[in-house]
Structures are given as C-alpha cells and as structure tokens.
Picture 1 (cartoon, rainbow, N blue to C red):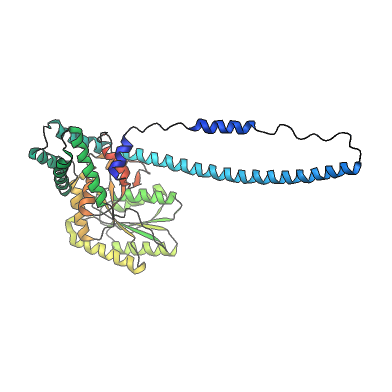
Picture 2: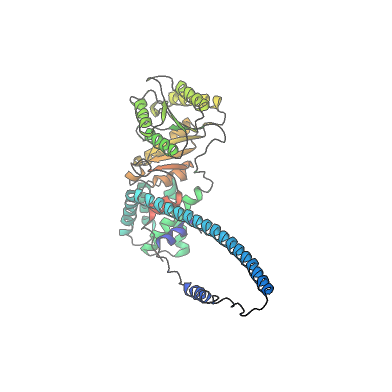
Amino acid sequence: MGLFDKLKKAFGVQEEKPQSEQSEAIKENQADEQVAIKQPELEENQDKTTLKNEETSNQADVTVDEVSEVATEKTVDTVENKATEEVTSVNEQNQAQNVAETQRYYHGLTKSRDGFGAKINALLANFRSVDEDFFDDLEETLIEADVGFEMAMKISEELRNEVKFQNVKQKKDVSNVIIEKLVNIYEEEGKSEDSQLHFAKQGPTIYLFVGVNGVGKTTTIGKLAHRYQTEGKKVLMAAADTFRAGAIEQLVEWGRRVNVEVVHKEEKSDPAAVVFEAVQKAKKENYDILLVDTAGRLQNKVNLMNELEKIQRVIVRELPEAPHEVILALDATTGQNALTQAKQFGEVTKVSGIVLTKLDGTARGGIVLAIRNELHIPVKLVGLGEKMDDLRDFNSEEFVYGLFKGLVTQD
C-alpha cells in the first residue's frame, strides 16, 4: 500500500468491526457449566483395616500428584499471563506514543496545512476545466506553497498525463490527483533516503551543527542535549562559534538549563582549538555524545569553508570515523531562502542531514517537499514547538498526514 493510499484510509471513516465475541462467550459458559459436581463417595462398612489403609495411601498418592500437577499448571499459567500482560502493556504504550506523535505533527503543521489548503482551494475556486490556463495557475500555486520549482513542474506534467487516463473533471478529483502526485513524488524521492541519526559503534558520537545565525541552531543543540541526557547518555557540548557576539554565552546558558557541560573559550578564540579540547575531553572522560556548535557566516564562504575544514580535520585526526553527522539547521519560516542556504552550505561542507526549525510557526511546510525533491538531503529533525521535547525525529508519514489532512476527499 502506497503512502497516498494509507492517507486515504487514515482520513476515511473506518468500518465497524464485526462483533463475533458471542460464539466464544457461549463456549466459555458451557465449559464453565461442565464442572465436576461431586467426588465419588467412600464405600461404607469396610471390614478390613488393611484394605482401608491401602485405599487411603493410594488416595494420598493421587492427591499429591494432582496437587503437583495443578501447581505446575498454575505456575505456567501465571508466567504466561504475566508475559501476555507485559506484551499488552508494551503494545498499549507504543500505540499511545504513536497517537501522541501523530497529534504533534497534526497540531505542529496547522499553519502549513491551512496555508496549503487555502492555496489549493483558491486555485479550485475559479475551476472551469483542466486546460492550459489551469496548469499555469497550478504551477504558480505550488511554487507559492514552497514545494519548489522542480516539483511544481513535475506535478503539472504528471497531472496532464493523469487527465488523459482518468478523465479528471470534478473539483474533488482534481484536488485528490494533485495531492496524490505530491505524495507519490515525495515518497519516490525518499526511498533511498537515510533519515536516521547515526551513532558511533565505539567511543563518543560527534554531531557537527552548521547553519546561518538566527535559524535556531544553538537552541536545537540544547534541546538535543536534553533529550540524550534524559535517555541516560553522557553528553558534552562545544561552543565553536567563537566570533558571533553572545553565541558562547547562549550555549553556556543552555548547558546550565539542561545540566550539560560546555567546553568553551573566550570570544574570537580559534574554533578548531575549542573542538580539539572538547574531543579530547569526550574521549578521556567517556562521553557518549559531543554536540558541536559552529559559525554560520555565509557572507564570507571562503573563510567559513576554511574554518569548517579545519574543525573536521581536528575531529578526524582524533576519531577517524567522526563526525558521525553534519547537521544543517534551516529555519522553515524562510521558505525558499532555506533551500538557497542548503545549496550554499552543500558547497561548503558535506551535509548528512537537516534539522528544520520553527516548522510549527510557518505556513511554508511545503519546503520539506522541495528539500527532498531538489536537494536529496534527508530531513532528520523538526521543531514542532517551543517546549524542550518539541524537537522530534522526522517521520515522513506523520509529516504528510499533518500537511494534507482535510485536503484528501473520499471516493
């Protein structure tokens, strides 16, 4: 089942499940009724004492065997029941977590969903027929919805072909086909995508964070430090953005809030020296994770490239497998500007994943579609709110559900 089919099923009213418990209940009642009522009565007026003793002895033996057998059965039943209860409890907890995660995405993408829906509805308000004027308006609408130029062109072309096969004429059919094409292209582009954060097999895991000033990079680091520390990991942060005024103090304050140590030096220190000290400390003191903040001065890409290259050389010299992730922080509220930043940073360093911040505060959630389609860099983290635990691992199905719920109509 494709992602769009799952969406239609999720958005539709589920059929009532047939109630077939009655037959099983009847069987249980009948089984309960078939209980032995009486034990055989002892024979009266037994003449021989020896015979009576033998019978008593035999009965005692049988009773011991029966008690042992019953005790064994009860023990097995108790173990099985306890195991079943534990599995049920785990399943219920997982189900509750899944529901909670779905609600996070649904509420976090309210602005994007409303904005996207408004644009689609505005397009269809003047709908007369699927002609060239309609396709021109569709391309413009999708570009305005921040899905990206390339995806807008793809959807327009595929919709042209779909019209021929499905004879699409109704508004709801046109809307469904548009959403279906968006979802299918998004799903196809992500098949080889690795959206998981990777950890070191041995020694500390190092995540290097890059991104321009003001996108929420330092806040993301602080929230991620809180998450891993809550999970029981030993976490360290490094303030390697030594040139931006207040950057060091900001990360130190986050360290105080989440009770995580921060390696830092005075302003305008060599960023690579900060990272070297942090990596040494992480290795010697057996830290699990080191999160490194860096500068984001894109206005001078040459200096930034040299700085990041030096930092990475220091890391690789100390830990050849590191950094395990180079995460680019992008502000979702900037729409297509975020796409431009991603392309520029891709020229400066090899980005392994993206954290999309402030996704809950923008109507430009469609930028996720453009990032996957045009950059082929996986979104690994998203910011869905201001709370400490609102930084979430990116879930593509939950994202699509949150973005398009209410726009897909049932047949």
